[in-house]
Image (cartoon, rainbow, N blue to C red; front, side, top):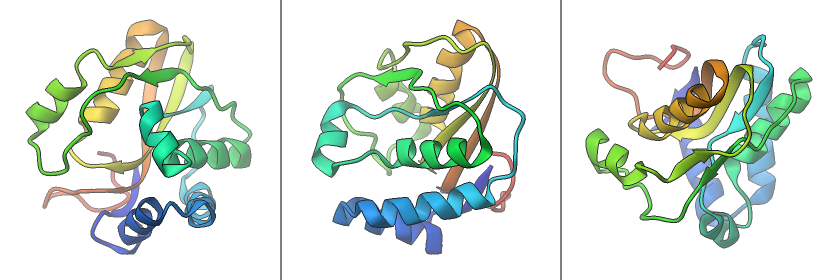
Length: 164
């Protein structure tokens, strides 16, 4: 599920938050996100990881803040279950195939989560990152993975609020 289009108001807020390294705006986005994501029966909320260098440069990781707010609001455990190794940043203009190849071997499950997981990301561009994360979770002990994001780059046939 995604709440809006990357080119819309939520996408602009996410881009502003990241560019300005604004932790207060990140928290505000997370509150809106947590209020608007429907309650899902799951065993854990997990965020899409980012390498430590990105977290250090920005001062926070938006997906982690989103997951913490959502899990807290819905009373679901928040688990740091995935790790991202260093590598080239995902290019927003790269093809889905190149984005997938860039991620090969870089995302790893570090904590098995049996049952159902809600995977949280800030932006879904091609879906390669959330797919890599879901594959890692499912390959460990997770049975079902749902995905929620603030915004996505949508294809013409999709509308916000649909499953991607």
